[in-house]
Image (cartoon, rainbow, N blue to C red; front, side):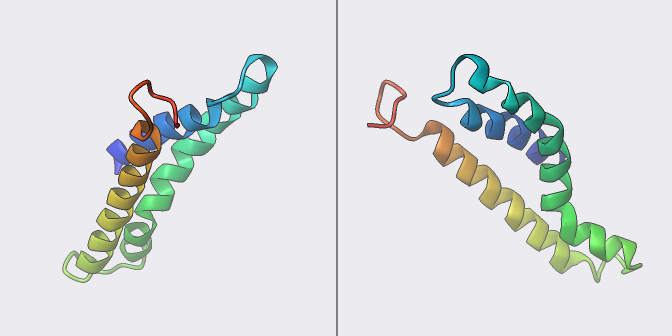
Length: 92
């Protein structure tokens, strides 16, 4: 889930900075540590729960699949939000 943490932490503030200039940019700096913790623990939560409950590796397979699904959906959503739009990069 570490790649999801890195990509989510890069993508979310990038999206938050769109259409902001000057002093309106400073609150985005607060998002960085929040994103690091949120994107790691949020996506990885199903596996954290099962591992801390003492489940075996075989019992944790479903939570691993759910975690993988969360990561794929999150990254696909960021991809669509970041790279959608007209050819000049602006939503038209």
